[in-house]
Structure formats: C-alpha cells, structure tokens
Length: 207
Image 1 (cartoon, rainbow, N blue to C red):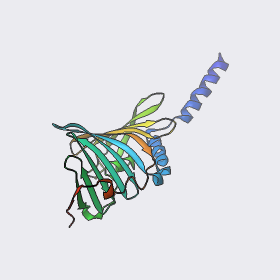
Image 2 (image 1 turned 120 degrees about the horizontal axis):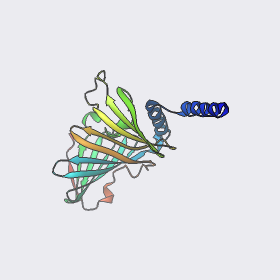
Image 3 (image 1 turned 135 degrees about the vertical axis):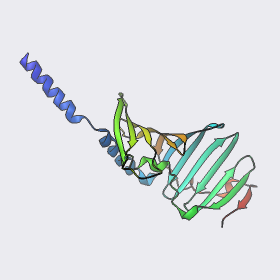
Image 4 (image 1 turned 30 degrees about the vertical axis):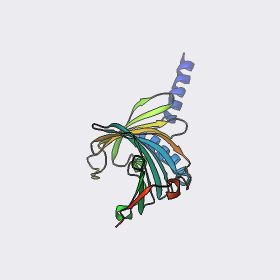
C-alpha cells in the first residue's frame, strides 16, 4: 500500500508540474500568434446589433492593410484600408466610396487588437477545461484606467495549437464574438483594385 501511495503522490506531483495558469496559457497563445504575424490574420466577427440582429464580418488583415466583408440587410459591403485611405464597395448601389482614415491610423481593426495583451490589466480565471480547450474569464481590474478596455471578456484557447478559438466581449454596448481565427493573407486580397468593379460609381470624399 505504501508503494502505491508513493506512486500516486509522484503522479499528482507530475500533473501539478504540468498544469498551467490562465495567464501562462494566454502568454503562450500570444507567442503562437506572433509567430504568424508576417502571414496576416483572418477571423470572423459576429456583432449583435439591436433591430438588425447579428451582423457577421469576415476580416483579413496583413500589415497596414485590411479587408472586411459584411453581409447586412440583403447587401454585401466590402471595405479595404491601407491605414491612410479607405475604400468601401456597396453591392446594392454598385458604388465605391473613398475616404481618408482619421489621423492616418493603423489599418489594424480595433477588435483584432483585442488578441494582443489580453491579460494586461485583467484578472484572469480558468472557468472550464475540456479535452480540446481552456475557457478563461477576464475581468478588468480597478487599476486598469483604459476607458476603452471591456469590463470582461470570455476567451477560449485551443489545446495543442494554443490558437484562440473565440473571444466574446462587449464593445460600446454591443456584444461581439470573435471566432474562426486562421492565418495566411495575400497582399492582393487586401489591396483595393477598381478594375474588379467595372462600371462602379466612384465617390471620392477624401479631404
């Protein structure tokens, strides 16, 4: 019996040594994401909007360039940006609207940026663990003075790859869920080309 108890104790010690804290899981996730930084990131954003219901946006981002495809109220809206200029194509009116990006800010979508530094200024807790994922609750600390930081987030990280499976939060009162993250975006796909929309009406509203 003593020998069995000794083996059990050793097993418990080994399992404990392999266990990871929620913060360590997030750090590992961010490290895996960084490995693919030069490839570009693809993800889907579901936003629950009053009256309209859930609006789904598929985002492709590579460096300073990004493209978003949104289906809303029976029409397709596609937007490209390079951090300085923004082009928006609306299928219903076959119109391309060109505008300047305020302050020439980076093209990186603000919600995409949620995938970086998630644990900073948050208390993170492992709420659930399955065979293929960790479920982590992130609650903003009182010391977090970033007014744009969500009060809480629900993060799911895949075991094995450490890729984010989903991230759910509220942005300006709207429930936003990020999911289906993958990598590999071509320069061509995130670059606007007017030749792809022959006959489109162009409205240049740049300052």
